[in-house]
Image (cartoon, rainbow, N blue to C red; front, top):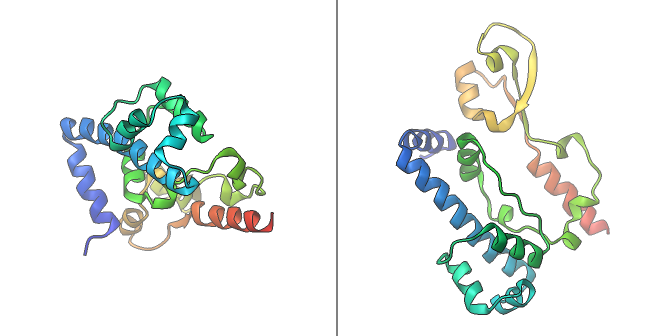
Length: 192
């Protein structure tokens, strides 16, 4: 049985190879945009022609983007973001964040709502909506393994299964923001 810990271990082993890292970054950019475009068009009930009109381009150009045959310039990405009425973030990130995102990606993560459909903008902010964190013994976070106090650290820094194995118990508690946040958003959207 392949577990998330096994998948993560395999991915970490592959990341030791520079060519693999470069290929993963390239694939993440190209496939990430490609899959998001498909998911957002489906979510909105749009055709390629609809996106082309809104982006000020032609359907054949959009078709190339949708098939992954075109390179995306920042200018193009800004046009597509504007046409879809979504935010665009272009930034450098740690490989640990890339690995975690690839291991936990779900279809719902690809469907970015437009500004007017973004119920999260109006949902009440709670501790769950701020960030996913893990409560671990402070000693684990600092590497000393002997203090008893607990600290909150970003969940992206740890694989919870590995933390529990290293501690020999389930002392680490995951506070996952995603599920409670999505429940808040749905509850708010239904009430609106």
